[in-house]
Image (tube, rainbow, N blue to C red; front, side, top):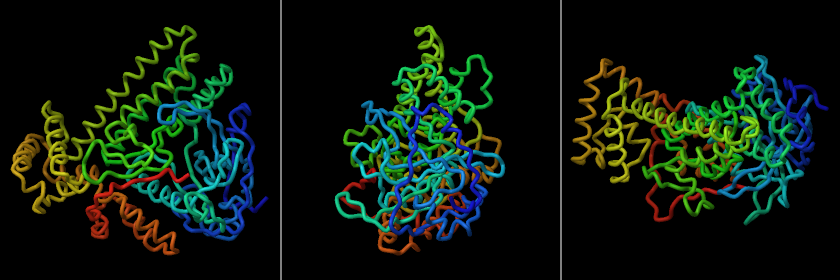
Length: 485
């Protein structure tokens, strides 16, 4: 065991039936080297960044030593992957345990890329530097945008190569999450056909994430309702900033309502609802416009898993679950409309608002305008940059928007402040992320740190962000992302 660096583990998941996990020790690596440490996150967890930024801390992040109190495991789960059901589990991730902060908040501490597990299914259990740094960058950007997400505490290189299409630099990411409970975790439990264990898992998830319903008589239906609401809220936030997850399998939908798994994710530049970045999503299942629908589909699979708990009468259970699932599109639509109103500085509601919003989005699509920069320009009142803003249809739309603003009680200054907190000035542009990853793989971390600095306060509208708002050079080759496995 190592000297405690502020770790305070209480591993409640290991008190569940052992069918939900396998005890697993990270596979040691030859020469771990710390690439990046998230000092602000470390402090918020009650950890000492200076002590983590040490040889011993690096040994922990590399899986060579265990922090005091950890009980490393690999979690079992299942999932519909592109619509096909598969029994799964952590094939390259090891959960060190659950860290309690000084305030009593509980977080999973997981090493991603820590070697083979019981669930590796022939894989090597390792990860490459590029995808781990991508997750670090995007997850921290998402947090700064105010979107619930897992976080990244550290990335280390392993001193070893991994073989994919070519030899790549091996790396391990330390991921921090409210938990790694997934829709797929419940699908796994349901597939075991052990009602007692399914109930144990549900009770555990309720106590951990929804303690306010712990004593409700109808708590399993209320559990479904709470997860539906959190996912509706989460996916709305994705849509409002143009985020495309890329691989919305049921094993990548959390019970806590956090965004998880940053493999083929990316942010939309030119507004097009059919945008797909993932190289393996050949049919556009997880395209930008499909994310709410897929969220609903995934939640239906969650509901199916809970049916035996919701009511002993299957028909009654189905009826209850269907009624709850119908809340998803209602909540999503209400959230999205409210969010789009805020992006346009609108405080009150009018029946014609949806038409006003949709007309603007249609103009963005027709003129191949950038989604983020269009709303940034509206917020900054910079409508002289040509393109869309010089067209007659936009000028006609702008007159209607100005008239709409005039009909509300709030001042233009108040509308401007609402727009500033609703429209990010900067997002992790795909070409900027690739630029940072390329430099990092060549040993230059300054590009990544400059990018992270610009993304740290996306609603600040600071001059430092200007260069990160530029669009990529035109290309006939569409941008593609990869899972990074």
